[in-house]
Length: 77
Image 1 (cartoon, one colour):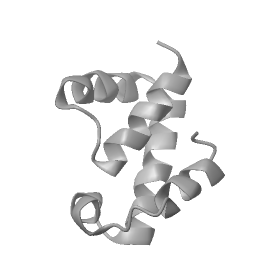
Image 2 (cartoon, helix red, strand yellow; image 1 turned 90 degrees about the vertical axis):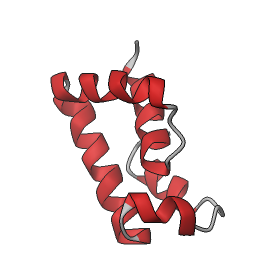
Image 3 (cartoon, helix red, strand yellow; image 1 turned 60 degrees about the horizontal axis):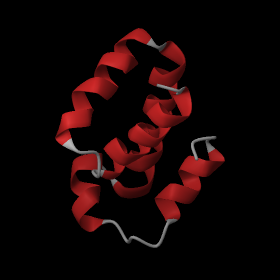
Image 4 (cartoon, helix red, strand yellow; image 1 turned 60 degrees about the vertical axis):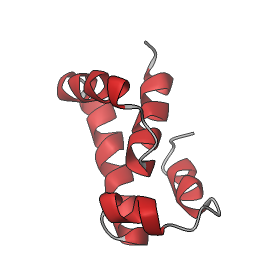
């Protein structure tokens, strides 16, 4: 799988949209790939800064695209 696909999975995970069947695959990759682990951490940090904890923000977030715009600015498309 290409890193771009893992980056999409990271975005989906942080947004609360990644299906559970793919969560383990993503986390296995993050344990082995430092570049993707850094992207994941930056996305989690950005999500927390914007909306609080990722778990709460899934329910509270305005789906206007603000979070995705931040991800794009971090280099995650």
